[in-house]
Amino acid sequence: MILKCLGSSSRGNCYILEAADETLIVEAGIPMRDIKKGLGWQLGKVVGCLVSHRHEDHARSLNDLLTCGIRVLALADVFDAANPRNRVFCKIIEPMHGYKVGGFKVFVLPVVHDVPCVGFVIEHQEMGRLLFITDTMMFEYRLADLNHVMIEANYSDAILQQNIDRGFMSPAMRGRLPGFAHGIADDERDFADDRSIGGK
Image 1 (cartoon, rainbow, N blue to C red):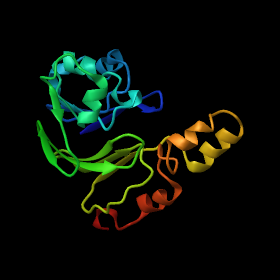
Image 2 (cartoon, rainbow, N blue to C red):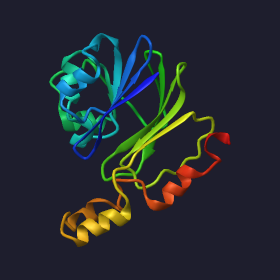
Image 3 (cartoon, one colour):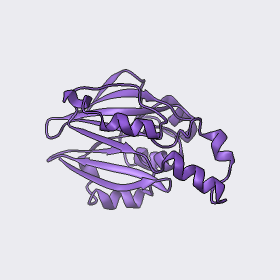
Image 4 (cartoon, rainbow, N blue to C red):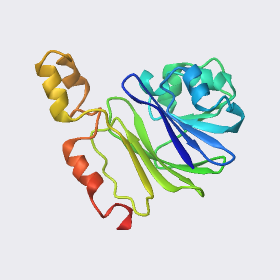
């Protein structure tokens, strides 16, 4: 299994899990041309795309993927916000449910953001179990038997406060992000380092 990070910031998020004969896209927050380039123009290997929530830095190319005939799995809120012309390749997912996407097994976990948002436990025979979470102020679950953990967290509370104090970021962000909900909180970093994750 090869993991490719095509973008991980407020400008856009997109990751590719590339197995020997199939590919899963996680997040669609960058331009479609960049996704195609990251795939080596091999759209035929793509079995689906997971989208965690409706914000543009995660769902920007959702409609383009659907137009290419790629199945997108996301909350109903994501599809309602994107308003796709055709919903043939839209798969509405629900938290605390599992889904099969090609040879990938995906379990959906709710996380805390200012819009409905989910994380994923993704399993494949070539990599084991991977936890992916993003844009959440906390993660309340303890999961055993994880082989990999991906946490998209592009700032800390301290850096966010410093940027507000310096005028680089609007103080209005404080209200939009309950508990600074756009990145992993400092106490959650301790959780991520906890040896009990993965049963160790």
